[in-house]
Image 1 (tube, rainbow, N blue to C red):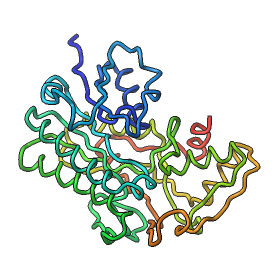
Image 2: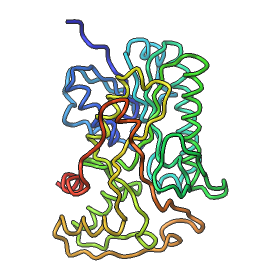
Image 3: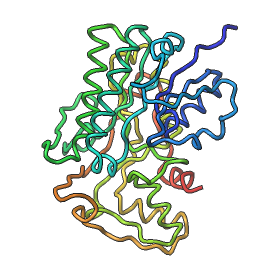
Length: 319
């Protein structure tokens, strides 16, 4: 039986990336991780650190020596490297835009020369301020104005999508674009504003769970193993090439309810504290009231849809 070609995972030392690396190695794929460790950590790869099939390169995509040679020997690329988290985006908009646009452009250019299949991870943020009850991949997008830095992340990831699909249309690069909706699970950090690990840490410490706004904004949370399953299936499905896919769970909850559930699961004495957006972020911060995915296209093309319940997700993330 011929050996499988290596797979490149950019951002492979991050939260989602590290779970993806573990799954690929378990399936018998050698994996090359390319990560500058700006937001990721080698600790996320401790479980597979000694795996003979794992190679780690600490660098940005744009500073990786021999990127072309690397892409010539891999069978596919999962491009997860990006600026992440609302707090980081608001605090460092230049870094956000330059990272998301520049690194993706370099990767696509190099991958196109070798015609290596690329799966690009984008974000539900690209749907912007739409009031739709649920978001479909063919919906129009409503992004806020440029003087509100909150939207720089959405715009930079949307341009990543446009560029990837342009490479697919004009230059024949095999590309799949995925829009991730609030992936959560073990090893996720609240360092950059991720809500579930932030709530869990506060509940464990007996501190107030800070809910921004009135807490009635709703989100859907997808267990990281479900996200990984979807990404692998999409990368391995030729019919997915050239298309955009929502990847998320469609079980909706308010942020206030999420906080109360975390307190209950951990048996914590913490209380919920409502915090005005103006106090949490810069004045003029805008948030999306709903962010629920339509995942019919994912299920139709791959036969898979995320089904892990929110209760189970909280229990596993807190375990």
